[in-house]
Every structure is written in structure tokens, then in C-alpha cells.
Length: 150
Image 1: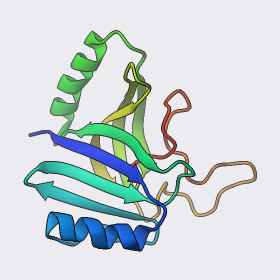
Image 2 (image 1 turned 30 degrees about the horizontal axis):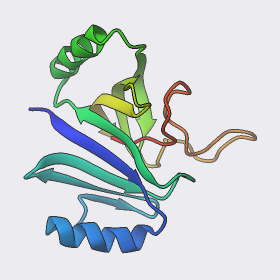
Image 3 (image 1 turned 60 degrees about the vertical axis):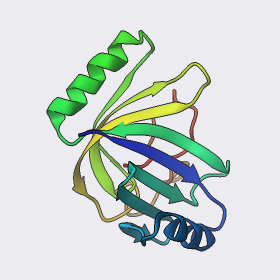
């Protein structure tokens, strides 16, 4: 069964963790210094926040697949939109390695369809950024939002 994914960019992570933990009635499923995620069953949503973006608010939306077959079914629906799709195999982002498809809706909102494969130790599975590299970027350059998760 698919799960809706919402990622918000926030300024004060701790304040937002308290707020959303109270709103959802539970603590985050995953929590790091720069990121928190609630895997809720009612409503069935993967809700994530991070303080990695300079633009606050909605970062991106998505659909999380439980397996590769479900991800391929979502990919067929994405193909039917006739919008450009960017594929990422084994992408490391938001402390997970995932297969992903990115698409941008008519309003310019990035949508991430993904199947998570394994946890990784850092936000984008890199020890330290090289010169000129954005350590927070894990989204394809053609999408409008500034960070990613899964």
C-alpha cells in the first residue's frame, strides 16, 4: 500500500518536532540534528521536516512505494502525464538509499515517487562535501524544491 510523503523545510527543528509530535500524538520515527520523520498509519503518511533549506515551507510531495513492483506501477502513471521524469537509482538522501522518479507538477511543485532500499549513516551518505558541492542537494537539478527525503 502506497504512502503519501510530505517534506517541509523549517527554521527551528526542535520547535517543529514538539509541534508535530503533539499534533500527531507521537514522537518522530526517525530523528537527527537536521531532520525528523513520522511514519504515520492514520493518516498513512511519511511526514518529514528538515532545516537544510533556505526556503521555508513546502519542500516537496511524494508517493512512497512499499516495493519495486509498486514503484513501477507509479512510474507508469507518471509516464501517462507526459511530463519530463528524472530517474535516480540507489540515490542516497534523507538517511535512506532509494530508487526514485522525480516529476514537477504544473504549479512547479516537485513530486518524488520512491521505494526505500536501506538506511545510510548521513543525510546524503557523504562524509564531507567537496569544494563547490552543495552538501544538502540530493534532488535532480530540474526540480524546483531544494532538498529531498524518503
